[in-house]
View 1 (cartoon, one colour):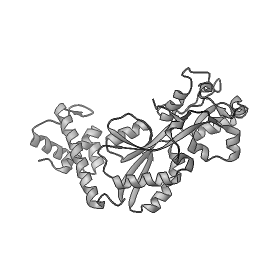
View 2 (cartoon, one colour):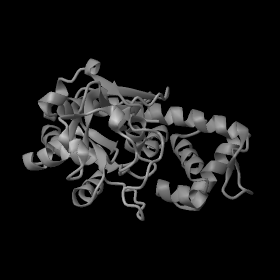
View 3 (cartoon, rainbow, N blue to C red):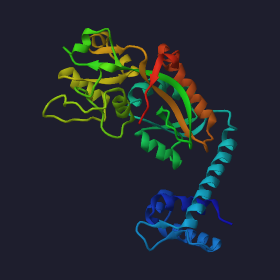
View 4 (tube, rainbow, N blue to C red):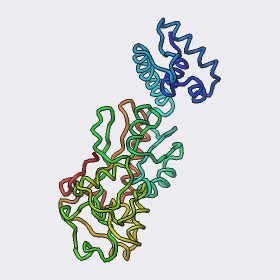
Length: 316
């Protein structure tokens, strides 16, 4: 009968496709890990890994064994969690990944309060792009993600938190500043500063604007950033415009809002923010505490937004 340790080693080798790297991940020597994998293969009378290939290749039967191992290890973790806190009190380890267009605006609102209210939770937070969070959830390397939804991924559960409208951030002397509101039909990619490839916010912005690639903002400069604050500062000191989520606007002074921000006519383009986790998730008490704290610390207007007033922008 396979042991829990053998199954953990099996999953590590599947992820790394390298015995040395898998041993490092498991904090054991490579000979020890290799011996346990070999013992498991002998007991099952199957070849799980083709060691002649580099990187290591998983056999067809090996793929089925690995998938079953993942299920077993996930259930073992559930048992440990229930034994630790009875699924009632929020305590234990929790890894939350957040996309970069949410992190700088939402995390400062709730992290300190969550820490104070849940002293027995060891919360690790990291910034990751959407596609990486989805992969990390599938590999059970993180517990949950703060993402823009819907993702339309049947392997994930989305717990809706709030809707967040978009605003235009506009350079001085731009004709948009002469209007009280901007229409979605007014927007084209001409003069538009974008985030780099891989950010779901970039895709949403392009879904709002005209699909035709316009002229560059600066005729001899092509620049795409990974940071909304960088785009904002470029616009403030040069030309063009971009779109920002409402939480980014809330951090601005009244003077900056008046000089650079314009809202949209209804239906207002909006993104949906959710806590996302896998079907194997078992840390319900911590997730509930996170949801509660986030909702309590949101600006009042975001807590009360109703979907009927908005146009939810697709990610892709």
